[in-house]
Image 1: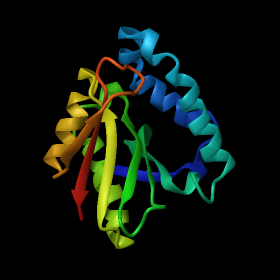
Image 2: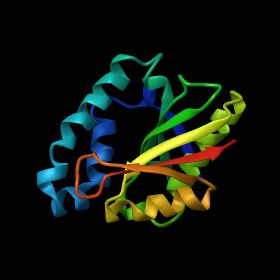
Image 3: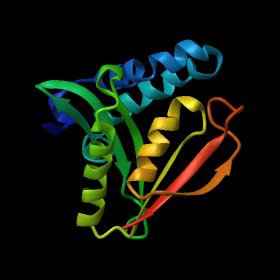
Image 4: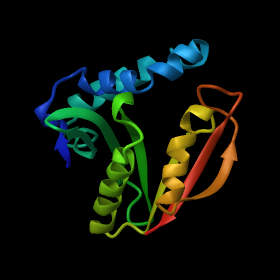
Length: 164
């Protein structure tokens, strides 16, 4: 069973460590584009722990078998119109088991509880993220646009939306 734990039970560095491990293959494949992201992941970690009642409140660590295996975050500030899904990752050895989808379902549950009308997520169009895009689509998200940018500009960004 997957558990969702507030970050207050963890410490600084734990979030960025999970993200770095989850994206290690991508960074290894395309270091010129993805190594610079590490600083953003560390800043996300610093901000979440520095602001536990705002940013940190909307991040949780997913556990399986008593071990942290991933994390997810969201931003409800645009509620009730829509909420944003933020960082979402699962450690490589736990990928492909549906845990990422369970994390997103937990965020959607929280959005619905707050009567949020839609959920938005953006991700890179890089092939590394194809499983995540398929997961979002299986959950009912629809692609609403593509635009240039992102860490690897060869691929750009995809935005998806789900009406709740």
